[in-house]
Image (cartoon, rainbow, N blue to C red):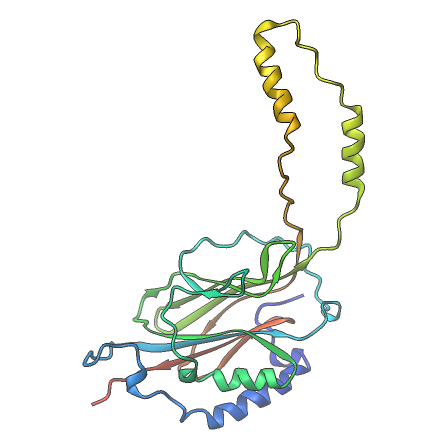
Length: 275
């Protein structure tokens, strides 16, 4: 099985996606924001290599059982620790980011995302863009992503990972996303085994004869009478699919990176200085 760099012919829904994006690209080029919408102070010259970076993260509406890939046994490294956040959906439904996001009306991909949702085959999880200078030899900090449904039993989002933007001669985007689902219910055997173990555990030795141990025994008895709350361990997860791909970007072209269940649209618009 190969997930990275999946080709357009792999999924039947690719034809629908291609048609939607093509129709958008023919009509959306003129929908660029005015200079006044850029997050620059009035009178500030536009920096060199100044871009609007846009990302739309999508989830295919498909039953997990329909996914042919079997990735539950894949080894997945822990989430990368980074203080920079592209998009994080919190448990209470709010979102946070460390970027100064552009208004949705400025985004070239906004219409494409809306059309994909209207098709009934995709759900938009993230639609975000911002302005930033990406000079040559730029080494970007990974941007954390946490999106999708909140898996309450596991206390995490179903889609998590990070996206990194670098530039040598060309812009490159590295997408590292995991799509999780709850693992099958664990067997009851561990509970039964724990019960048998508790029945076989011998009682603690009587220390009443030792006078210096009396305070400890009293403290132990008092603590035993107070049942402390036990926090349940997060439910186990298994990997449904992932995206592991680095793609060279071409300005003002829509790029699509995907897996059988999630996809990422990427668009960079270079902002030129005006006379």
